[in-house]
Image 1 (cartoon, rainbow, N blue to C red):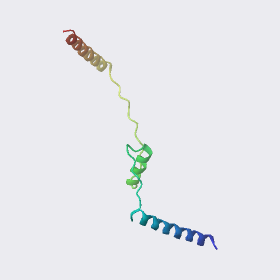
Image 2 (cartoon, rainbow, N blue to C red; image 1 turned 45 degrees about the horizontal axis):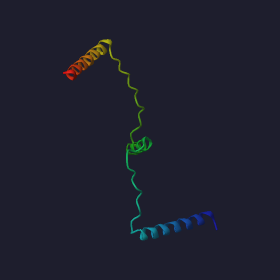
Image 3 (cartoon, one colour; image 1 turned 60 degrees about the vertical axis):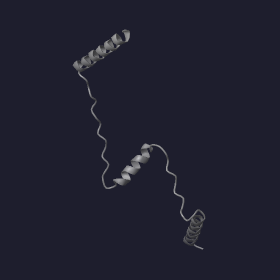
Length: 93
């Protein structure tokens, strides 16, 4: 018996067993359970690429780090000090 004949026989038996299982389980093959929660990054990336298979993946651009001027930092520091002073004055009343 050739290997291709053996493989064909095995495939036929698998198909019969799957049909028998479907009949016993109520006619519908059991669907895999959906996992609860946020998908892992790798899974999300695979799903995203399969949906947009025609669009080539672009490398992510690295954003420039924002820098605050000394004047801006000073204004924020003054505003925070003013807010804390008002809060402290309100608490002591």
